[in-house]
Image (tube, rainbow, N blue to C red):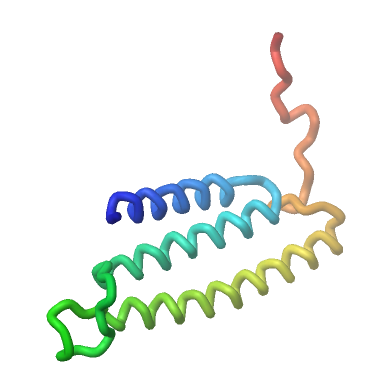
Length: 117
């Protein structure tokens, strides 16, 4: 189970970084969201993955650590607020500039490499 969990965190991180490096605003927002999900899963795993473990100390030998759960809950709320803020900024930039490129201008056709057959 731990290997699958680590693989999921790695895939989310890889996809998030790939999407963050794109030139349009929507993939950047999606990439940042995926990175925040990966960080949330990593924080959640830092509290030891236990099944049927109580969150209160003293009632069992195996218990769930409540601190990572509280950190993840806080990170989810902050991540949602930041995603909403970035989407509003992207919509405003699209309205003001007329395109949704990250740097505010579309790449010239002379800068893009041509397919060589």
